Length: 365
Image (cartoon, rainbow, N blue to C red):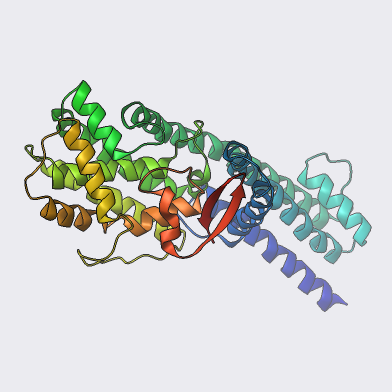
């Protein structure tokens, strides 16, 4: 019997350590780590919200449902931590001589710091102190985590909203180029690529160290951080390949920082992609779509290069670097439909349809 109690005590102590270490890895460790407990919480909650979303009759209803997915999942984490600590301490109290009924009451009283019950042995009272400290520590971790996460979210969305005024809603490179040409002139881009490079750097850091933020949807219906990223990189790629203007190296650096950020986020979520695609590898953009966009740019008066065949080769050579990570991340976060990004995630060949009234919303498996 003594051996059983020793095993129960050690098992409970290991379980408490595992829950606490999971919380520290999620909240404190300043780099993205795949934590089994956190991942399971988000996966289970994703199934619940997708089940509700599949019954939505409009995209607006679907988006409203999925907007609650990340916040609810995040707030479910401390509940799971609390239950884990509560259950793990029960065999530890039992191991020092209390009954199972007393162990349940003592664990609940200690974790919630209510203090209405405690075991008589000194060892039991010491366990009460330890459990109460762990409970307070987990609450403190959550309180410190949420402000940092929402600060990163607000900073990300400020640029997304700024892009909407320039590139439309949903954002598209065609709209971005034409609108800037008419309002400010294409010289605007030479000074703006630095800002977008910095946005991509911050995007990679925040979405890998605080992965829950990737699932926080934009306050605006047709906006999303991932479709905004695609629109910015497409704009830079079209500028470099199609426009007959003085080019700057910063546009190339911006594209590189963009696809490196998307690849880092895709790697964290274990999304497959080719890390070294050939320049002539297939992309999700068809040549006729490219030609139609170029024709629209010409009608709007933008200066174009003479050799459009080479322009297509150059554009495809840039796009291939971020095409697959872009589409897979669009599928992962169920991004709203946007041209040249989330509107073609069926190109991946691994999607399922979610019926929304007359239309079909596609999202990744």
